[in-house]
Length: 125
Image (cartoon, rainbow, N blue to C red; front, top):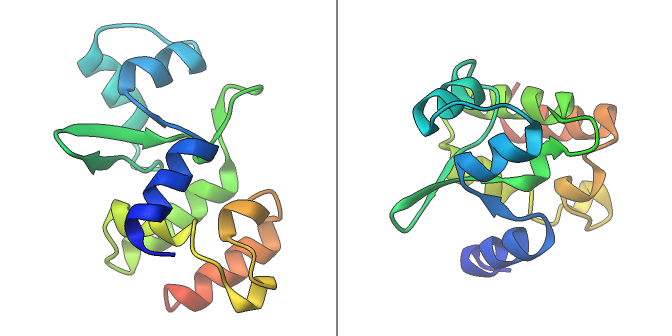
């Protein structure tokens, strides 16, 4: 699957959200700049540029618990330490891997051990 198909899959399956949409879903307020700082201030979540917008991939959130998935935060940190831009890390989650029996990391994001092991191999850590 090529990058554009991966972006379409990401948007269709989990959504790509503006900062205002994420803030509303996660239950915090303030103006757009304040919300963006709350989301990205600690650098634990992905924000990707699509066209002229900065969007947050929905796969990294547990909407019911109103939080970022801890395993995703770890993978984001690892990817960034390896020098990968957020867009590349986001697409990595939608890339099938032989080690996962051709599943994608996004499909096993609840399995912390499996996801962290794969990310460590991919990001050279």
